[in-house]
Structure formats: structure tokens, C-alpha cells
Amino acid sequence: MKGTQKKITHRLAWSVSLALLLLCGAGCGQLSEAEESPDTSSVQTVQEEEPLQEDPTPEEIVSALEEASDFAYGWFWDNIHVDHNDTIYEDTVMDGSWPCERVIAAGVSSKEDVLELTKAYFTEETAQMLLNYKEWIERDGALYVSATEGLGDGGMGDSMEIAIQRDSDTQYTLTIRELLNGEEDPMISQPYAVHYQYDESAERWVFDGVVLVYDRPITLCEEISCF
Image (cartoon, rainbow, N blue to C red; front, side, top):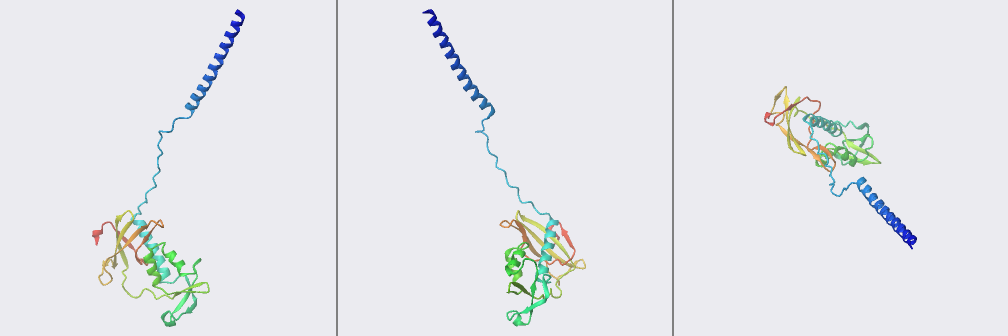
């Protein structure tokens, strides 16, 4: 009888030890996982803010003005992108008396192609205005444009002064004064203005008017009151 009680007591002790071991193992495992995996429920996700559009410097605006001027002059006044020896005549262009020259610029075979190029420098309204200054003929997969008529006589000084005013995050006003021999000449032109605007849809800066710099030196004025 006593031997039987000892066996039962031994088995109970072994069962209790095994249960404690399993319980400890499970608890220790959970504790270990909790230590290795910190609670992130209280961590807030930080949203990254998109960088603001950087303001162009006055020098960058003037450089952009010169590039826009070169583009406009080359396409709409000087016709540097054509073959002057490949011409056609169209009744709709000065009653067929004015030649139209074939455009040879790479990738350009339609008026729409020229419009897209122009919109890289000017607002769509100004780009359309520039294209309307010329006559365009699409024929047999080629594009022809009316021959240049030049800039005309007079109306231009030999240097320019420009004052730049920041109107907002997306617009600057450029006020231009043309000088003759370093002095203002009312017979040339009165000061005029164009705007440099940020086109958010195209993510680029463009002008809403045309200024033909034509290799003339430009002086930047710090204050608009200089006019």
C-alpha cells in the first residue's frame, strides 16, 4: 500500500513538473516574442511633404527669356528651320504670290508639332498667337511655312533694362524698357510687361508674351521703381 502511494505521489509530481515546464515554455516564448517585436500600434506614420517649387532667380528668368526669344525668332521671324530652296505656292497665302518653305526640323511634320514645341516656352494662348502669325501648309507628309517677312524697321532699342517683381509662388512680372544709346526714347516704345508663369499641369515655367532680345545686352533693375 505504501509503495503504491509513493508511485502515485511520484507520478503526480512528474505531471505537475511537466505542466509547469510547458506553461513556462509557452509564457517565456510569448515574452521573448514580445521583447523582439515592439508595440508599433502607437507609432504614427509621418507623411513626407512634397518639396515646394523652387523660386527661379532673376538671372534664371532672364536666361529663360533669352531662350524663349531665340526660339520665337528662329521659328516665326527668321525661318531658320526650313529649306529655302524647297518652296511651294498656295492660293490661300497672299493669293498664291508668297512662297512657303519646307520645314526640315527633326520630328516636325505638322502645325501641331510646332505648337507643342512652342508651348515649352510660352502659354498656350501665346503659342497659338505666334503660330497664327505665319501660314502653315501640310502636304504629302511635309510641313511648309510662309517665308519670313523680317522684323520690320525701327521700334527697337540697342539695349534693355528689366525689373522683375514676384507676384506669387507661380507668377513673376517682368517690366521691360528699351534704351537707345543708354537712354529711354519714347519714339521707340513705352515700358511694357510680360509675365513668367508656372504651368502646374506641364510642370514648367512659361511666358505669356514675346520679348525679342535679339542679342541686345540686358541690365537687371532691383526695384520696379526704376521705371
